[in-house]
Each structure stands twice: as C-alpha cells, then as structure tokens.
Length: 333
Ligand code: XMP
Image (cartoon, rainbow, N blue to C red; front, side, top):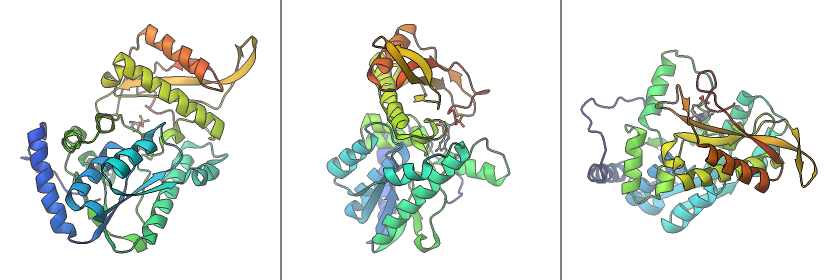
C-alpha cells in the first residue's frame, strides 16, 4: 500500500453525480496506468474489493483477472453472490477457488485466536499466490485499499499499539511483486459505498456490514470444527434474515453470532440434548474503537431464539451479549 495523504481540499463523494465524476476520472486513470496489461485482484466480495473490481471491469474488462478464494469461513451465500454478480452478471474474468479443506485442515486443533488469524492470513496469500503463478502476462495487482487503511498504517508506523492483528493479509511473495492499482485509496467507506451504488452493484453488497478477514474463523471460538462451523453459519444466516425482516439490518452497525466451544445440557423432543449456545452480538459504533450494544426488542430476540434452537442442529440455547467495548471487543476473538 502506498502511504499518501488525502488532499485537504478533496471533495467528499456524497451523491451519484459526484460518484459518476470520480468513476470517469478513475476509468481514464486506470486505462492510462495499465495499457494492454493484465491486472490481478483478490476479490473477497467485501465492499472495497467489489467496488475496485467493478471499476476495473468498467475500465479494462477482461484484462482484469479476479480470484475469489473461498476459505470455508465465509457467511452463508457469500461466495455464491460473488459468482453470481461478477462471474455471471458482470461477465468478469473470475477464478473461483474452493480452498475450504486446506484451511480447515490447517486450523484443526488450533485454539489460540492470534494463531488462527496467522494461519488464515498466511494460507490466503499462499492460495492466491498459487493462482497468480498459473497466470501469464500479469503486470499489476489491484487492491481495495481505502483511506482508513492508510491512516491505520501511519498510526502503526508511529508505534501505536493494536489490540489484535487485524491486518491478516500480509504482502505477496517476492516473485509476485506487481505494480499496484489502488483506485479507492483516498476514499472513506461511505464514499466507496456511493461509488459502488453508482457502478450498479447490488445494495446488499455495497451496504454489507464489516466482516473480518478471518471470517467465521474468529466467531467459531477456540479450535474450529466443521459441525460447529456449520451450525454457526446457519444461525448467523437466521440472525441476518430476522434483522432484515424487522428493519434492524439498516440500523445496526455490526451483528453476528459467535459460538463458543462449550456444550450445556438441554432438552429436545423430551430427551436430553447437549448443544452449543449461540451468542448474539449486535453493536453500534462510529470507528470500531469503542462500541455500544443495540437494544433489540424482546419480540425479535424471542423469534431469533425460537428459530435458531429449532432450525439449527447442535444448538440448544441462545444468549445475548450485553457488553459494550470496552470491556468487550466487538469480536469474541
Ligand atoms: P474488535 O473485535 O477488535 O473489532 O473490537 C473491531 C472491528 O474489526 C473487525 N475485526 C477484524 N477485521 N481482520 C479484519 O479484517 C481481523 O482479524 C479482525 N478482527 C476484528 C471486527 O469485525 C470489527 O468490525
């Protein structure tokens, strides 16, 4: 990432008109920078990489090669949406890699959160680099760097200490050093979203809540197992569906389920049923440095509890985490 400062007089992109102007400028700049060469992009399906992909497709079409690595820790339906939107609707050059087994095999038995993050980050680079090496004629690497990433790196360079190693994706290996294309590097998140909508990306993709790089890996607490990960993905999908239904999805900054590696005794169909608890986290924040919890109406909590305990195999209780940050962090790991 190139550490450059946003000019003080740069206009904030708040409307479709301003976004269209930005898009035209970037399309011209990308064409001038890239020429006839090919550009590689790791497309996670998050807001930033999706907007960069859409911008590049507009500018250079099939010269862009998108690689979507499914690490097996995506939320329900996310990889499918990437394939649908980029592979089908936008007809992009998309390579889909299902690396679920590789990641889950490496993570088996690893309970320490920072070790999990390191394994996921390292393996991600490994899989992406393998795909990059198979391709010919790549000269550029596109990245969804946004301005807060640059500000964070400046803070880190000044020695400010972080609580967790959020920057899970490190640099690419020596043999894959390309010139960078970072078209949204001076934008804040809200501006990236306005640009994404102007580019015609689906609302749900553009307004997707923040999702950590290690994905469900840091929400399936402790050592990840496939059955608990599956239960987590299903329970999380129910939470999202119910938040959509009652309008909370538009209001709450981040919400998800975490499942700890403990079982409690319960009862289902008149028999003893040992299951995991699903923990609901729903928080509001401006900058993720501190956060307050959302006061979810009891009726919504009841509905979610009812659905998760009846529809998801392996879960017999639902808990609501009332802890603000501090003292809790937003994620449990
Ligand atoms: P915490 O848990 O530190 O989270 O209060 C603050 C914000 O950062 C996200 N988060 C991560 N994002 N890689 C990421 O890309 C990570 O390893 C990671 N850990 C936490 C978290 O979801 C929240 O939005």
